[in-house]
Length: 179
Ligand SMILES: [Zn+2]
Ligand SMILES: [Zn+2]
Image 1 (cartoon, rainbow, N blue to C red):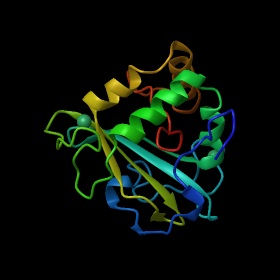
Image 2 (image 1 turned 90 degrees about the vertical axis):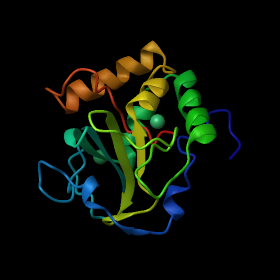
Image 3 (image 1 turned 45 degrees about the vertical axis):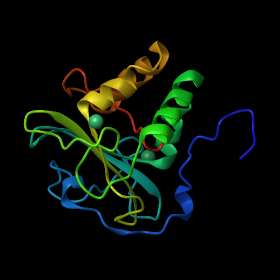
Image 4 (image 1 turned 135 degrees about the vertical axis):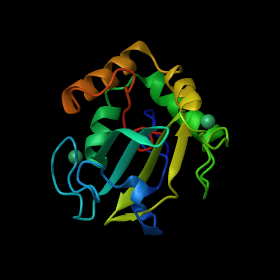
């Protein structure tokens, strides 16, 4: 795609086939089952729209979860600084491997107990359209470290607005859909 602005997504998401049901690790703790609505627009997710699920674990304990639809993710992404969008894209393109095990998609290490990791998936009609992705805390911090002050503020505001009360340091946003 040729344009002055980078395209918001490098995954050709709309065309991806559904590859399998959403595994339990990407189910909602709160709902005790699959996510049903977008955390931002609160619309139903089962109408064929693409959405991203993100869950953060400390060891085996889930400490944060969200499902956000493509349109809402794009809106958050549009507030990121240009440099940050580029940095995320480059980081994911250069370093990410989609794996079939639970290893970190960046460094390959399997998270050991007590360490944190973020597990995410891109979903449509209750099915994954890309292999699930795990990123360990070390690599997540490396990615966060590339982001501008402005972008980190956008992430912080996003979490404060939609997920009040989550522990500090979880300034996540739907990264996969932004890459
Ligand atoms: Zn939404
Ligand atoms: Zn890693």
